[in-house]
Image (cartoon, rainbow, N blue to C red):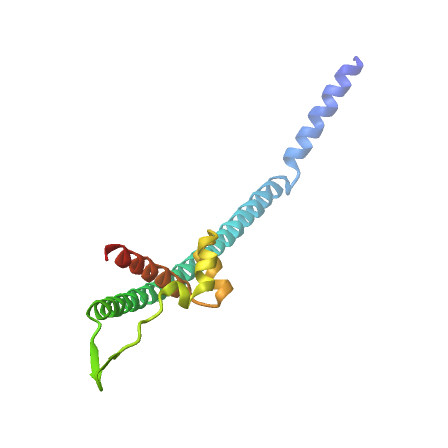
Amino acid sequence: MGPWLYVVLLGACIMLYARLKPGGETARTAGIGEIEQTLEQFALELEEDNRLIMEAATGMRSKLEAEIMKLAGRLDALEKQMHVYAQALSAMQSARQGKAAAHVDGERTELQPEPADMKSRYPEIFQYYEQGKSIEYIAKKTGMNKGEVELIIHLSKQEEQFRAQR
């Protein structure tokens, strides 16, 4: 018998021993069970993470919706305020045109002094505006709300249009 025959016989004996050895099959099934348990635990962790992400997204959505509603309310209030200011400006402009005067002892005196224009009342705002600064920048520098700054600039433009029409 040659040496290669001894190697083949030894290999066959080892394979037979591994087959007949108790626990060989159970080791494989135990390994498969551990893998299944690990995969199941991983799936549970993924489900929990997904649930937490969904809760966070829902919370953020409700916060954003509340913020949008708050900002919409502020926008409505500013639009109403701007409308009131526009009406007041129109009233002032029509009063300027009508200039009611009263006669006291033969002298003519005005009942209402002439209001100053917007640019002279808010020179700092118009200085920044003419420099090309943004509404946000002007609001921060003057300590006013953006809506107020926009309203003042808008009313000034209306004043200029009114003067141009005269």
